[in-house]
Image 1 (cartoon, rainbow, N blue to C red):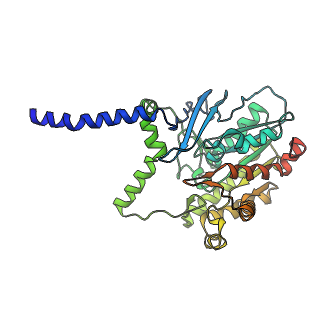
Image 2: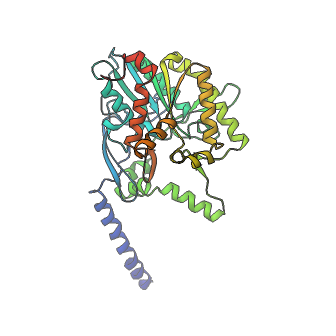
Image 3: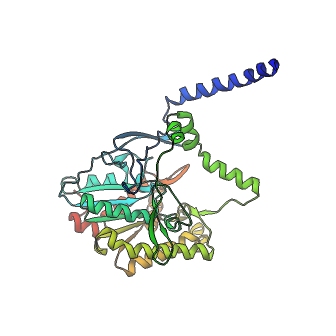
Length: 368
């Protein structure tokens, strides 16, 4: 028994020292700090982060593209404090991680660029968080209108926004999803940070494993390999499954979203513009783009644009804009190891919004 204990200590001690050394060393590096999410429940139903946080972010095992960001007074990743008493015209920019944009410096984000363009004549506030779908955008639209008197919306739509709005497909804590019955009602999945989650947030090593090494994704890949399941094919950064059941749910989500949008936003179609992502990275080569012309995202892009257009909404399709810019100077619009828009992607999106009828009607032109 003594021999066993000595051997156990001899094995565990070096491992423990290695963990301690990694924990200490990583604290001096740009390991993502993560954003503390405030509790979301019936009394506080709007997903926000804990206000007034400093946030560090980086990408990949080697922690590239480090950024220092700020969660503002109202709990959104935006460097300006929000003023609910202001009467200045407000454009609310709504979306998921593409609007959250933790890997991009504030002045280079879509909303940072727009805010700079209208400085002195209006406001641009952002409402976004990773994994939020179309159904959640309705909640932020209502919140922006009721609390900050938003007079216009720019809603960013990407490949995974559609079927993930359905409660039977996704159940992200803190967000609202459609329960796809006859009335397709919105249902909140409450969020309360667990003691384990709070404890792990204090560990730089744990944050590095989860954020930089993407432990959850690695676990899913290993699980699929063990179970002999094929790796999913992604187009436009979403699974390319085009089964009739998935397409039916996704199309029903889009229909329901547009049915509810006037009620939740309190705005007409002339005050809402959609910013639609392109099928990156396939759009960089004509042959690649042609090969995915019948993909899930390709179909949903067309369905979404047709539905929006029939109701009088303006859709800014970034795909031709990305293609034109790429042909002009070879620009890429995502990070080398991360599919989110880089600074150039945000630049193209911002220029598109500034060219829109909604932006001109609210602020009287594109440049300040």
